[in-house]
Length: 315
Image 1 (tube, rainbow, N blue to C red):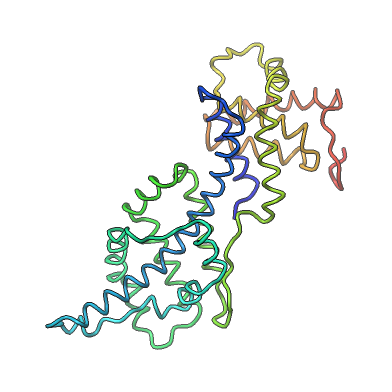
Image 2 (tube, one colour; image 1 turned 90 degrees about the vertical axis):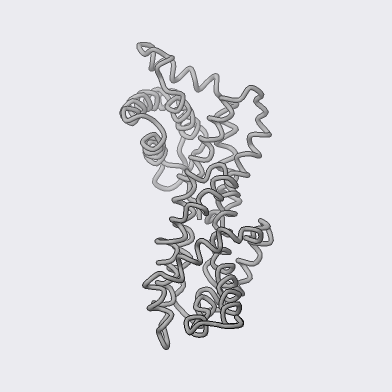
């Protein structure tokens, strides 16, 4: 589930691409923005679906081994393990997950090479073998083996990583968030009698968050001339060409948020964009952005541009 930090980053990435584009169709880039957010949710659904299709792949492999004309003792002893995992069983029949896979049309059909590579690693994994030999694993053991397989094998597989990078343009940035969403869903599985899993939505309140991120994107672009003046006034002694484009965009977004989003605390806005700069800009950007925004905030307050409403926000 994405939070406002993730949404700010998505807006930042889209504004950056917009600034670099030769043809700047704002509505088209707005669609790109929403698509990039949906892609996070889609990849989350697809990674969950992977364990279901690995279960089916394992079941077919076991059937093929035991049906050999001259099976070995190892072939005869082979048994499906994932099919007996309570988390996988519940995921396989979970309506919310099924709805997501249908909505996003996610599947691993045609990707047998990826499934086989991951399965071949799983079936020789020591913890997996120990789990498979348990007579009656408890809920914790069902949950922990799936967590282990995702962390140590699935998330680390190079073929899978290549696939995700090819199909999701922002995967290198989204990977940590998506992996965290998958693990959170597994951790939430605590009761074998449950009829549904905690399949995560895009955000806690997508209707509200969608308005936020779309407004942030559009208002930053539409009010660029006015916003740029605030920055120019406080960077007169700086070589404009030496100010990183990333820093400029983050400051513009912060100013937009300070002026237009009255229910978001000033401190939250300031901290968010300073933190984002640590990830996407230079080591010195944090101090630079913080210093410039502090000066701009003083001016905005003096002319009444910053008006916070709501409990605890009025200064």
